[in-house]
Image 1 (cartoon, helix red, strand yellow):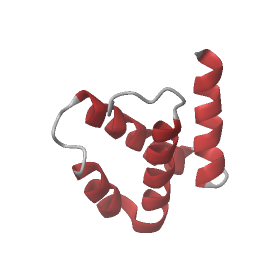
Image 2: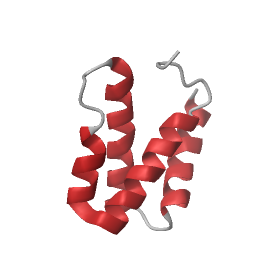
Image 3: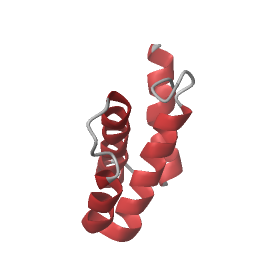
Length: 80
């Protein structure tokens, strides 16, 4: 099921990829990356939200993209 991400790994991967793209390629890179999620399905909307978390992490948090997204992912898992 494309909509199921029981362990959050897909969310983490989207965060990490978007953070790294933002870090290396800037806004044009993230605009391209996000354009892949444009069909409006629930899964793509969730992927887009996770991409935005990676972009936000790149702009606002300290550390590597791995550390930033892992911290957010672990925080989310603690709430579930």
